[in-house]
Length: 398
Image (cartoon, rainbow, N blue to C red):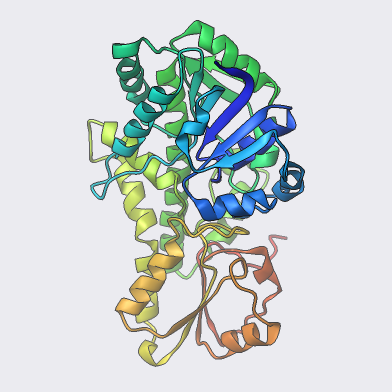
């Protein structure tokens, strides 16, 4: 028997699942948060978020010891749920191809537990054509068709705000399921966009690939400007100031995280022409740490000098290390036996004196992650500053 108020979130302790779980709880649903990370679950039970997400903890404290909010690492607890969300990662292999074996196995395991009155909603990013394969597999033996694809589209760290503001895309081959899912999402946001599953898959993948490629253009421009002793960030501002035709260009800098590169490579796997912009974007973005090390190696007596790296996480004002290019930079510096220190304010707090000492004792400063805390740092002119994002640019246009 299905509990019409119960919703299970598989991967509910993660960056996508947790904000969704909290918002559904706020709407009055009985939420069952399922995750294999027991450490994250323990924190959530105490009303603590296992990662940074703006405003989430003030909502989480309302879930403490509330019977409408359950956490579990046991998949079987989803049994009587009306809706089941899949919010787990969809990785790529070392050969940069979709690696969905574990994802497919999870879907099959879920179907064995739930009944045909439940609705299964895939929230994870999947390559176009994947949903059709899953639908056929579930429909083949036991006639389960209550499957929908509703891709997440929120910005990490801003999910609590964006889930209710950004239009949500929903899709299914089953019109009855689509009706139920639309009703559910209409309680979370103002606008619900309905389309075919293949269109929803492609819209999600293209969105991430577009952003990744935009960053690669900026990083290519950065290198060209840098090689000609020019500030790309200043030129980017000149280009875009009151000039809409150049306003869409991203800032340069490291491009990491669990999604953008991965989804761009999923799209590249589908492309018949492999010599394409997708692959070239990958080469530009992934090789930026190597470009910086090569720049350091051109400095006279570089091995006797220390490098101070500001930032370790994959994006600004965040505590997430997944896919961090700063980690790649550190690895290459170690390989080349270049002395270095790293400061990451979102993972460790150091006294101001120690930070100043770290910078003063370094000859080369690399701005890897443009955290807002770094704005307070003063870097003397006798230091070599490598600022890939133009974060420290103080020149005014007029």
